[in-house]
Image (cartoon, rainbow over all chains, first blue to last red; front, side, top):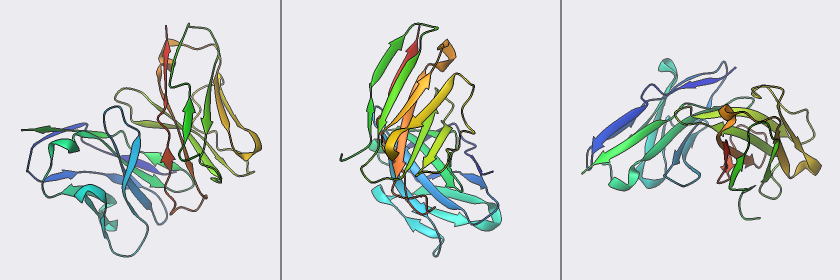
Amino acid sequence: AQSVTQPDIHITVSEGASLELRCNYSYGATPYLFWYVQSPGQGLQLLLKYFSGDTLVQGIKGFEAEFKRSQSSFNLRKPSVHWSDAAEYFCAVKGNKLVFGAGTILRVKS
Amino acid sequence: GAGVSQSPSNKVTEKGKDVELRCDPISGHTALYWYRQSLGQGLEFLIYFQGNSAPDKSGLPSDRFSAERTGGSVSTLTIQRTQQEDSAVYLCASSSSPRQNTEAFFGQGTRLTVV
């Protein structure tokens, strides 16, 4: 069965600083990986997805993620955080069903 | 419709009552998921429907929870004899196929409060 671990419950970064949100997955076959964002009062929106090929994938809003098979990781990054990025971020893996991690709440301080 | 629609958006019920939550997926989407989102608990998988296949019910927390999907479209999640710990946001998602490389689109959720 697949599972996802997001080790950081909360992260606070200064506006303009770089960001990395960690995600580790467990799945016996080729993983299909996703990052979603949930802004306050909003539904979940897909940021990016990885299926195969280039291990660095680009998403919306300036986000990117790198798939590292040897580390079973799919960390989300952004070079310069904006105040509007404050939200909850979810990593997910799709095997026979779509399973999410517990989420990381991002706070941005000015 | 243009997106996944869930109703009601908010529901307050008394402990012990039954509730039904509705999900209208995107037209033509064959896969449908239900999740529960409690404070600090992330998205907990509940049940997955795919076409005419038997649903994956492995995430339902107790036999008070059940779901059906009629005609491969609308789905209803039923919680019987509600308890306070059932209070959460219930999210529905649909995707165009069971293939692993298809993304899921989410509704706005139903916030259930059991008093």
